[in-house]
Length: 179
Image (cartoon, rainbow, N blue to C red; front, side):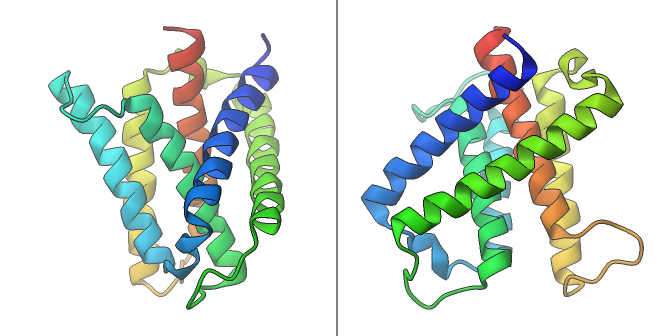
């Protein structure tokens, strides 16, 4: 399979989980402020790192499920940046899925552009490096949020969310196709 095929399969898996959770819970995440989403991403990435270091987990959800969650919370973060925070679940499932798909496509397009320039260097990396890079992006995001979104020369929160999404997809590809 090509990188494009592997990516599309992985993002479709994430979208399926997002869609099912949307049916179970609605868009309850609409009340989350971006800082809370960043903290949720931290919890997921930190758990992956903990499992990688310890070599074991006591909860049934594996690293794969956490990478899926990072993709989905990354897209939720992008949606919240676009729409703003709501006081209630105000987003119909159909509209949420359309917006989700739009951001998934933007993440794919970004990956393809970077993949061209970096010549698929990510394939030579270890999954643990994706975890560390996601955590670094989270710490960068927290700093930007603490600075009220202002940066001097750096990309904003949205760019960091996109990078987290793509590193998590790389982890999913490696786990599924190269394990």
